[in-house]
Structures are given as C-alpha cells and as structure tokens.
Length: 498
Image (cartoon, rainbow, N blue to C red; front, side, top):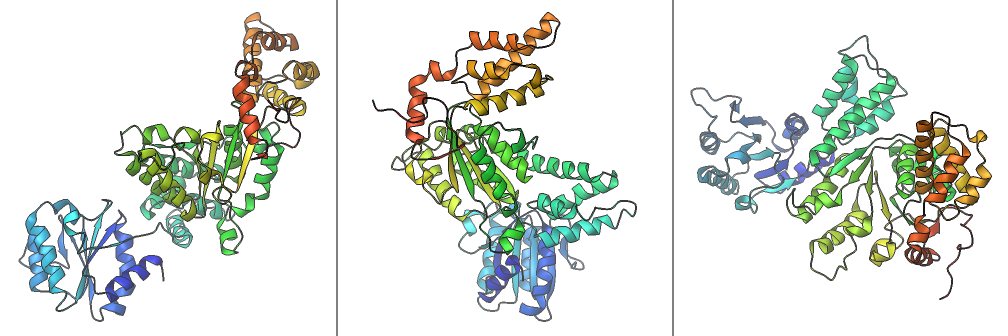
C-alpha cells in the first residue's frame, strides 16, 4: 500500500468527510482511490465533479456544473464512496459553496457514507475551512510507477525502444516529475527517435524547465567531472568513494547515503568547480539556489519563498542542491528575529529531515561568519578547506587550461611558470593563460611561455592584495576543516603566531 493510500485509509477510518489534496495529478488520485472503495465503502463508487462536466456519473435533468447545485444534490442524495471535486477551491469565495461544504461536514457526523476529496494546485485549504478539512499529501510517483508509465508509452512506438541499460538512469532522472510530465517527455523522446544519449538530455532539459518555473532555482549543466579538476585530491577521493552510495539501491540496502558537503576557502581556489565536478561524477542533476532572489521579495516573503524552494528541490530528487557563498545569506545569529534567522532555523530542520536523495553542496569564502550549528558534524558529511594550490597542483592547473586553450603543455616551460605563480589561485592562473592566448592571437602566432610570463608579471594575486584576509581564513581553517589536498601550499602552510 502506498503512502497516499495509507493516509486516505486513516482519514476514512477517522470519518473525515472533507479531505484536501494539493496536486495537479487528478487521474492519479482517482486511480489511487479505486482500490480503497471496496475496502471502506462496500457497494460504493467514485463520483467526480468539475465545473465543466458537473457530477459524473451524471444526474439526469439536473445541471450540476454549478458547484452549489452539485453540493445541494449530494446533500439530498448522498452517494456512497468517494466524491472527487476538481478545482472547487476556485469557488470558495462564494459563501454558499463554503456553507455547502460545512453542511456536508456536519451531516457526516450522523451518517458517514462518503468522503469528499478536494483536489487543487493551491498550497493549502482556505482559512475559512481549515478546521473542517484534513490535508493529505500525494507523494511524487515512485520508481515503479515511472517505469510502468515509460514502458506503457514505449508500446505506442514499436520502432523505438528504451535500451535496458538506460532504463534505471532514466527512472532516476524522471523522479520528481508528475506522471503526465513523464508522458510528455517519453512521447517527445520516443516519437522523435532519440538515441540513448540524447534521451537523457531530453529528460534533464525537462527537469531544467521544472526548476525554472520556481524562479529561484537554476539547473547547472553537468559539463565535466573530477578528472578535469587540478589538485584537491582529498575531495575527489571522497566523492569517488561515495559515487555508488547516492542511489536508491544504497537506500534499500541500508547503506549510509551522502547528505552534503561544505567547501570553504580562499576565493578562486576551486570551491564551485569541485562542487560541479562532484555532480558530474555522480551524474546527478544539479540546481543552484539563488538566495538573492529568495530575499528580493519577488516571490513573496523570504521565508515562504525559501520553503517553496526546498519543496521544489524535494520533488526534483535525486538532485544536488548548490548554495553558493552560504555565509552571505545564513550568517545572522539566530537570536535575531529577522527573515535570515528564521530561514536559518528552517534550513537546519530541513537538513535533518530532508529526503535522502537530495545532496546539499554549499560553498563559503568566510566560514567563520557561519553559525556553529551549521558547521558541526551531522549537518554536512564533511567540511573541506581549499587552500592556495601548491606547486604540483599549479602544474596540473596549467596543463588543464593550456589544453582548454588549444595549446600543448609539453611545449611550455611549466616549471618556470609554476615558480612564477607562487601564491596564485587556480582562477588567477586560468585568467593568465586566457589573456596570454588573446595576446598571442593578436600577434598572429601560437601562444608561448613568454606570453604567460608577461601576464604573471603584470598581475597581482589576491594573496598579496588581500593578504590579511587570506591569512585569517587559513588560520581559522587550520584545525577546523579537512584539507582538500594532502600537500599544503608553500611557506604559509600553517598559521603563524602574531
């Protein structure tokens, strides 16, 4: 029995006459109620109502499209079973409709023959009827339901097949979508004769569209994995060990599923890059939560917008939720009665209770600004510190960016470039290579070591322009976070007294 069926059974056993469901999946609700009719209302049936069709089965000689007429008829001639009212919430500004529902509520205390199920996309029952209505949740379709629907659509396209090896990945990617949305995606994919690779792209594109509807969530393309990240070996090893644990199979086996990771450190040292690489390695859709939009007021109060964002990411699971520069939005002490403090408290609670297949990936430049409650073990699986790259890492970073800029690393004096960029971040090295390529192109020749030297001589790294801030970040993290790499950078590896 599904969770929805369990909730409905509890509601009927409790003799609740008015039940409220926030969903757009009307057919799925009706299908879920069918097996419950014989169990709870022997000899009964399912009646449906909408303002376009009225009551079905229809009433001869009576136009029941008017909600007041329909409620009057059901009061006078109750039908045993479930009565599913579609979008009745749109008429609850009519006092006669509200009164009609109350009459049904009080009549059921004398003879409980039917349960009225109000389906609406609105988030909550109206305030005028909250005491009389019981809210029930319809979970996102299960993997079994999604696979069954996929195979159902597949039968309509004899010449197109979903490869068996693709099915598990497609099911995971489709989780969080309504069954109607699964239909649309599979019809588009199979009807267009998409290959296995483009099939997954179509599914991810649909997930991106769902996130875009929320407004404050943006899907981040999975363009690379940890193999293109220079250095940060500890983070890459950590992610590789947990790749197979972020799955339904791991949950069913009782294995520990990764909950989240917090990556802090010096600006430009690869925090956001490694977060994207983890999602790419795991092949899990990644969504960036724009906290500036949450606080903008464009989507209602910040607290309500944040709540909707968390609800949305739950429906999109499995997913990686990326919160960039967390200290900018969650650094207020919770004793202060502000929207930030209330969002902070809600986030802590959600982190403890969120679905297992939502992985929270957060970055922070100044982690000392974050409250201690969010940094402690248990909120995140691990807190990593990304320091300035050491010599070996700088060599890897140069190789990566030279290849990206159509250059052969073997044609460059990497040793001298590594020495000349001591104290540089990965982002600064990237910009030096890009600027050198532009300069060489203007000169009409291939990029050379000298082009990069000129850039490194003219640029001042952040470790010098903001030396005090960088030193403070490194001192804070020295004994509080796990280093992202085993080999630390240069002479400033450990904090100094002073």
